[in-house]
Image (cartoon, rainbow, N blue to C red; front, side, top):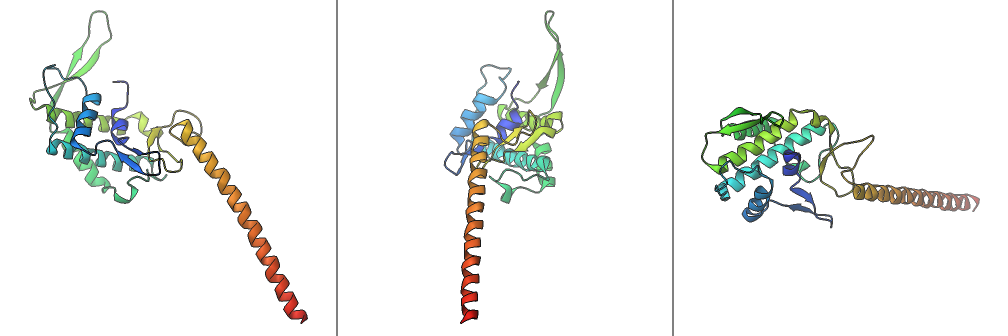
Length: 218
């Protein structure tokens, strides 16, 4: 897949546009819809994915571990503010991630069509589709964190944004242009407030000084 599955998993925690945070995996139904859209097509086209409370809980736990390790990856810069106050200990996140990846034993197999490029596919002997889904997501997170893209991972600095993103150029600080615009507007108003505050402080000092001098003359 060309898209970064690990980044898409952590991005299911996102800004709602009104100063709050949305969870795209909040319910079993939402998790089922997200998995149907994002998981690799199964080898058996007739295999159905049944999302129950157990699978839902495992996906949520995996996402929490991934976001904890994403926060570690961007350190010492601040992590996403969405869950910075409730991240797992890094060692616990690593243990959980590795354990979920290990639930599906897989073997690499080389595919090399006569008119194409060679590629590797992972073949599993596990019949349970749910097990394969969790393990595949965990492996995607591992591949990302152990790969070169980790060095470009950033937490968006725009006000209210909670996304992680991959820095693709220069001094990029935001996940998308709209966040950049919002950050610049916030900085502009911040400078205006600071300037207004400085003027107010100066006026206060002048008035205080005037009253002090008047008292001394009296």
